[in-house]
Length: 402
Ligand SMILES: Cc1ncc(COP(=O)(O)O)c(C=O)c1O
Image 1 (tube, rainbow, N blue to C red):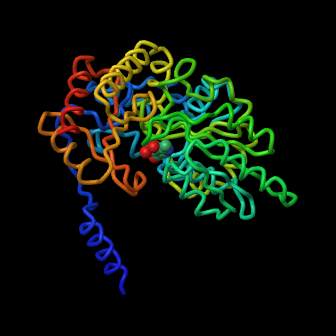
Image 2 (cartoon, rainbow, N blue to C red; image 1 turned 60 degrees about the vertical axis):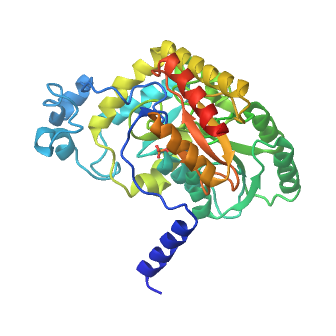
Image 3 (tube, protein in one colour; image 1 turned 120 degrees about the vertical axis):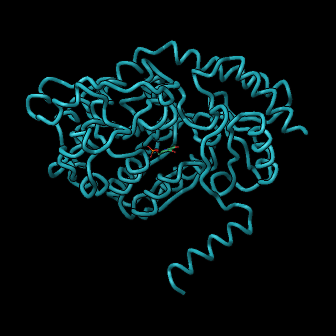
């Protein structure tokens, strides 16, 4: 069978299962994207703040200050993108702006160091596959994101998939492994802090306590909590005061921060090791420096924006309260509101009915979620007017019940 035959057969199988996906242009009120604080939907052009030393050392920024970042502009209008030394950061892709960004981010978290990577997927996969070696043992929550699963596939450790947020199950695994742990082999626990499809939080304090009892290293993916929880929005690990007790956290800009790129936060040694070993940093083109300038603009804003965080959590509470009153099954209490409907066709039907009422809420089906738990994933934002959230909640309830 040729490679193209293999692809065609797989697509036909998905069609047969009603799981074939196609791209759909956005329409209706956005209850789908992860633009939790509403930054991403603003249409004004960004005028990046460019640090003076960057300007002095790198002439390419000079033209940028006078015009928007160039996102959405033609190549000729955007000198930064064409003159940024597009290559790996270990070659000419590095830029002074990233030093500023990484220092600012490390300060935000009160951590030693940060390393920027190109996306959250890359950061998780790169971190895990670089630091975990075959023979190490990794406990991973069954609902962890695909990029964590990919990272583990690449480095092939002994793996223990524990039931979602089940501390007893996790401890069973740790106890059995610690008893026979070969010398020189590491134990890791990997979890998200706020789960992307269930919207619930990991029991992080208890996980860290278990890790300390059994000598395991904790890695936390903060993709969905960055910007929205913790002191000045720096995430759940910082909210819980656990920074010094975890090995690393992973944060993406692509959700609440409204920017692209991602980073690993940890020790200087970890950063150094990744710079030397992480293929996802070494063998890929660095993000353009314009993106760094964008991070420098967004960071103070998100740090100061307690008001957006308050609106976000208030909207989430409204949504949860109405759905609970209407007897719908939802998990967690965050701005990711999963309305579990069971089988795929029911979720698709309700999503379509909502779309007809002007709401963009997507149906999430296996394999993104476990079989029999197809759902609507409602993504609440800070800039949703509260009456719109109430309207959506009532619409979800009436469509789901009909
Ligand atoms: C939990 C989690 N981790 C990581 C990622 C990847 O982040 P990025 O979109 O920046 O690649 C996602 C994105 O969907 C996610 O939900």
